[in-house]
Every structure is written in C-alpha cells, then in structure tokens.
Length: 315
Length: 250
Image (cartoon, rainbow over all chains, first blue to last red; front, side, top):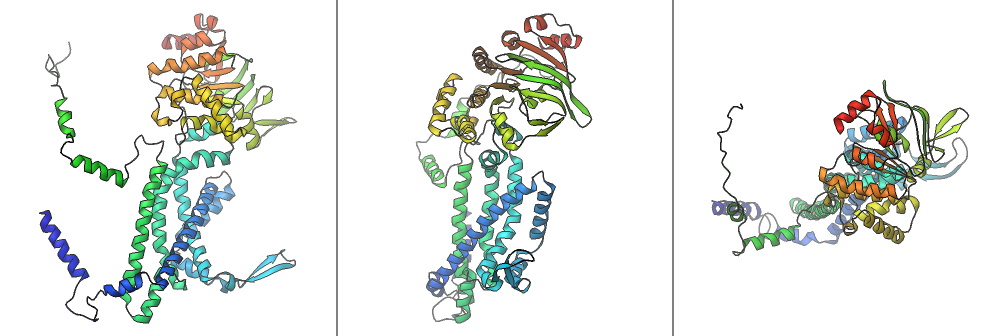
C-alpha cells in the first residue's frame, strides 16, 4: 500500500517538475531549472533577500516593542491611556495593511513638510517629508505600526495568563510595578507570547512582499525586476519562493528552540529536540531494546476478586 | 509593632472588616483564627497594603501603612514609597506564589538584588544560608515545579526572610499542603518565633496557635469576638461562636 502511494507521488512530482512534452526553451523542461539555478544566488536576488530580512527584523522588533507598550497602556488604570491604545488597535487592525503601506508612501501629499519648532512661534528646522520617507522607511513604518496592533493583543493575552499571586508576591517583596512587569510577569507571559509571535514573524516575512508595490527593492521586487527584463516570470517567482521557504524554515526551527527555552520551570521534562528524538528512535530500533509493553504486562498482578458480588444492597 | 485602630474595609455593600482594634508588640506572635470569610486574610493583606482600607488607621513600626496624613486626610503613598514599606514586611502566601521561571536560589536572591541593590555574590551567600536554615540546602539549583508543596513553602519563607523583614505575615501557610507536609513548615515557623521574629499568622492549626502564639484573636463577621493568651482563650472560650468554631476544628 505504502509502496503504491510512493510510486504515485513520485509520478506526480515527475509530471509537475519535469514535464518535457513541449520544449519552449532549448534548455530542457518548461520549468527552466537552469534559469532558476542561474538567478538563485545572483547578486540582485541576494540583495533583495537582504532587504526582506531587514524589513522583517525592523517591523517585528518595532512591532513587539509597540505591542508591549500598547498592551500595558490598555491594561493601565488610566482611562486616557487605555482609550488611546484601544483606538490605535481598532484603527490599525481594521484597515488592510496593503492600504496602510500605500498610505505611508503617499503621506507627503498630506504633510509635505515636517517642521520642528514652537507652535505659532519660530521654527528651528524644516524637513521635506518626501526626502525623509524613502520607500524603505515608509514600508517599515507601515509594517511596524500594523504589527504593533496585533502584537499588543498577543502580549495582553500573555500578561493576563500570569497568576495574580505572582504580582502579589513581587509586590510583597517591595518591587515597583515596572520591575514586577519586567522581572516577574513578562518572563512568564513569554511562554504564551512566543508561539503566536513566531507565527507573526513568519507571516511578516511574507507580508513584506507587499512593499514591492511602493518600489522597495525586496526579494519579490528584485525577482520581478529580473523577470521584466528576461520574461522568465515563473522561473523568477520560483526563485523568490525558494528563498521565502528557506527563510520561514529557519524561523520555524528557531521558534522551536525559543519555546523550549521559555518552557523551563513550567514543565518537568522539556520536549526533545529533533536530534534527540532521532537518537531515541534509533535506539528503539535496535533489537536488544526491551519492548515497553511487555514489561508492563508481565508486572501486572491478577486483579483481586471481591468476596461478595458487586452492587449487593447494604444491610 | 502593628497597631490597628477602628479598621474598616468593605467590598461594595459587604463590610468585610467592621472596626478592628489590635496591637502586636515587638517579638510577639499573633494567631488569627476564624471561619473562612471572617475577614482575617483581608486584615493580614491590609498590613502590607495589598488591600486598601476604607476607614481607620493601621501602622507598622509607628508608620502609617500606604498613606501619609496631611491635616485630617490620608493621602496614598507613591508606588516607590509603598514598595519601601513592603520591603520591610515579609509575606508568605497560602499558594506559595514562588516565581516558577526562576531557580530556588534566584527566587530567594531576587528581592535583595533587585529591590535593595545587594551585590549578587553577597545575596547568594545569604540565600544559601537561609535555605540551609529551612532545610533545603540541596535544592538550591532546583526549580519550584520540582519541589513538593512543603518544600515550596519553605523556599517562600526563605524568600521573605532574605529581605530582613521586621515583621512576617503568614496567610494560611499550611492550608494548601498535604497533611504529612504541614509539620515541616510549622517547624520552620516555630524556629522563627523562637528567634524573636514578630509574626502575624492566619491559621487553622490550633496546636501551633496553642504552642507558639503569645496572643490569639478569634474573628467572625469582620469583628474580633475573642482575644487573649492561648492558654486562657483556647481552653475557656467565653464567646458562643468561638466555642462552636473550636468544637468543629479541634
């Protein structure tokens, strides 16, 4: 059964990847693997990869900091602070990130100049917004402000999950509210914050491709630039996809180890790393390893039999 | 050391404390007894301002807790000032409330290092000595989840002692423990009392109250109904509700 399935899958992959019924290029398959190989490590694509990584790091770092700030504001006793946070989240979560990117790119139309000075008084410096907000900076701001709204809800859920007794214990030691949050609550909230943040980072890595629309030379834009010159659209999209996949894979592995780190103290046995699991599987395969079930069964004594029939009415 | 005058506390329309007058001398051990809902835990939490009182005055070592008096009005202290007051008052909770992400020794050193600014090496040395005192020297590197309830509570006591408190508050310290683990925690508390620590203990352990307390207070319905030395009060209770309570727990 498994063998039949394997053969079918192999045939399918062969059809998808190596279809050679027609030969549009002299090079072989329609996929043009040579083209893909040629551009996969080209300097233009690599610089695009770098821009994508930069955008992801900037947007996530700023997004997490903004998220913590907004979460604390939302949980603050001050009505003003919590309302400001609520409105922020409402607005940035309620409009498409694509629109926000285009909006930041065109914001110079609304505010052509940024002036530093005293209101209604002298101004010290005036900056042209268009020269300040390069496409890269506009894209970073759009992604980070949007991410902040999502992160704040993740952080807030994490903070709420920490038992109130923890805050009380910290307070009773004389810790200030800020120290309690930083040293006691946030480290424990991390265990709940990390997994969704990993998802957000992976999602962000792909969302950065939207900035190609405002001409930021990211991975997708670089691939498109090349495709526009040589018309190998599919091949260049595959190049971009390979890079996106490689990067999300690295992030997934990193997330596993980060989660493992923050599970310390809350679980007795840390989950095994893939390497450890492989080693376990290998030792289990060895014939001299005792089957677990056999030991359990042989150690079971026969169940004691009751003298009187069950359910007999009491006197 | 602790002086309460006409302390009132209510949650909405429910009066939890209805005019508590109480005094605890330096080096004295006070045991608060009473059925659940009698207000004894609330009173304990008022002493380090985990709860705010609604009327009356409560002072520790001659200093109002959580407030500053200006004329006839009380003003709440700042976060930092309240922290300084709490740092001098140790508290042990029913559910231990150890910090699960920190090792045992870090649980004990975090207070001195982060609040008092004690050097790490010095704090660690002192923490190890305190853990030895509560009989847990071999658990220094363990995490709280690897300890039994009794061991966790002893770490919690060491954590509170690390701040060199002038007063220790115990909120039903043995109520969440398996019966066979109660003794080890009470032994540590007995040792503290013998060393002259001022203690306020909310407890259901009558044996401990009889043996260790200098003063026993019975509360019900937010009021003090009986008060005195354990030998008198526990043997010859005059209040009817206290008699009924004792007949149930003894």
